[in-house]
Image 1 (cartoon, one colour):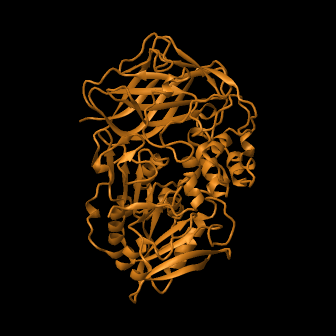
Image 2 (cartoon, one colour):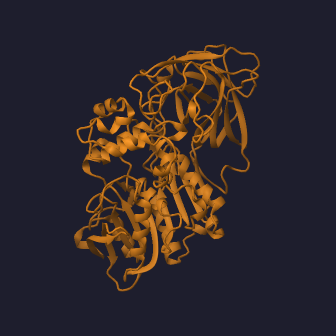
Image 3 (cartoon, one colour):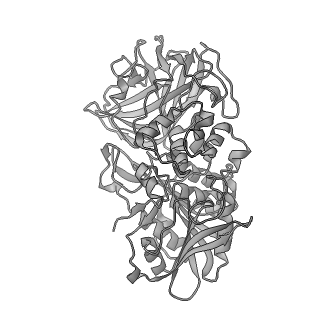
Length: 581
């Protein structure tokens, strides 16, 4: 039976579509009559500060000590009908599913991300010492439940032996809050409000995104959500965020890990980067070799074949549950399940719609290719004269557009979770806007594979003291439809780094490097490669007010005139990781 994902959140969360989910891989419900396990409900596990967290425990009926599969979730716990419990206990595993602090039946205050490092460690220590435990633990689950695994991975409990984080993250500041220096509004406010007990209709949610000033974003609801205001207040990486992440301690991660994610997931970049960094930096040589990643054509729900407006074929419907099961059998039970033959990076090449194994990231055979922006000064909209090619520009007229923060370019598809649909969507309707510059190649004479990290180098000036620049990569099909692959944003004041805020001088040309994250796509012969440049992607990211004032204080949205240069001295370009074929 194909695996499905159970979002063990409240019904209201499901209704609102807010699914920063538990992502438990399930194999169907188990009725009370066929239970092969012992079920214990709301067992209270003590933390170091005396707070007790509730867990449901599923144990084999046989006598003995067994390895444990642990999941820590803020979305509620499955009961005795939990399908995974039947499969795993029948295979001589114990399953423990715990409510995070302040959630479900657990004690304490719910403050997202804050206590998961310590609570994860303490829970593992308790589980490892129980009379039914072999002392070996594997962790599972996705999204926030992927975070609760990574949270305790650096200097982990001695009992932690293997992890399978699905659509995970490990650095809340980098991965969730401020990618490129811009506030990831839709996720933080939409998800943050929902798990804070605020339920909004779709229209009310879109209205709430426009609230100003952002520093009171969490106060606009009937039930205030103070931690949302905290996220706005802490716009730099400080002690607040260090307590809500692993603080880039890849060296201290010594646990074999199978990361699973999707190219269109909101955590696509970090899913592969975490494995890559641990493979390079862990102090444990054996563990460096036992970091694996699976990246499919998926958004936040993995293992499906249709995402957004595209069907990626039957190969995309991967049985992720089987991969997880084999991983735990190998690491916790010592069974030969074939994982020693797995490639370190198992990647789905979109367009070709096939899986391929690789041994490193970026791929050693990558040829980073420059695709330069060109125009006669009128690249505005899909009707403009923008072009993209490998030919270096000489003397060309710059492109200009007006970024009106009160009328931002809307989010359509991409790496989203809340507030906008995720995945590939035809962008041609959005590209009718004059505040979007469009640059497109001629039809390709041969297939071009792009697999790896993508970036845009932009030479630009603005009339504002601070502003944003966005970029997007697309595959234009022969019928003219342009499907988004990946995108990114840079806040001008952080162009030199998040730790070096520096406002810009109006009218002065600056060099910007925009991280478009990662992708793998075969641009087929006859297709075209397209890049978009603009200054907004709302509500995925907050609207830059163009004022240069301290973040979160603005009550007024201003206009800015943006100028994009592409000439011999200022060659704005898309940098693509091209793979020879």
